[in-house]
Image (cartoon, rainbow, N blue to C red; front, side):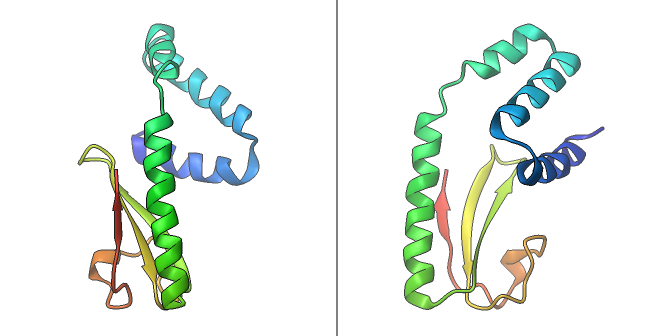
Length: 114
């Protein structure tokens, strides 16, 4: 299974499993594919600054979306660029989250977040 298949699976899991179940499932996958040592090292990573940067970016996107009466806010991330991500508030709701937003004429602005 490649990383993209796991990303699709985690998206499905986000809608059907509790956070604790998701953490346990992917901890076990990490142990299987790498090692328990790596899984423990990953588990110990402090994500507070990352969560705060996401919160700040999302708050800004929500404010802009509210002011512009946007129909949706999407988060797009780049696996090949250190998980660089952007929020894309869209002024119309016709594009789906799987669309290539950078090519969409309907997305008129973005909010960058780490």
